Image (cartoon, rainbow, N blue to C red; front, side):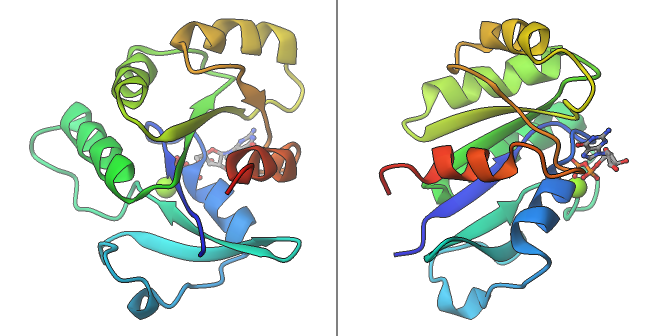
Length: 163
Ligand code: GDP
Ligand code: MG
């Protein structure tokens, strides 16, 4: 059993940066993953002896005519279908946005485990950012820096806890 970790979040929060750090660009053998949609970006990561599948949800579909909200809704629904755990990534420099609230709302209604992470947290107040994003009602947010690697191991350990 390889848990499937799906990264969701609005554009530009750092999903692909986190994906690349988790997978170090190893490509998973999608053929070995029955039931998964092929138009996603799949990779394989590992913590210790525990391999997992990572899915980067954004930026691989042509920009939909219906606009960004519809695209995010689709990706979030997709995440719920495929995921054993969802990493909901946000941007600590921009702060909490309406789009974050929209995604958060959908994730709260799902039965999937959700781990909330605040990216780009290097050099900002973790306490202030955490207090702001706590309002999403998805538990204690974890500040990380996908670009620098800070908090990424802790994030994946929390995500895979109990699996
Ligand atoms: P995506 O659209 O969610 O996939 O976001 P990307 O991974 O493409 O990143 C969007 C931008 O944020 C890029 O310019 C990244 O270099 C930048 N970025 C990603 N992670 C971090 C981070 O931890 N800190 C900072 N300061 N910038 C980051
Ligand atoms: Mg991307």
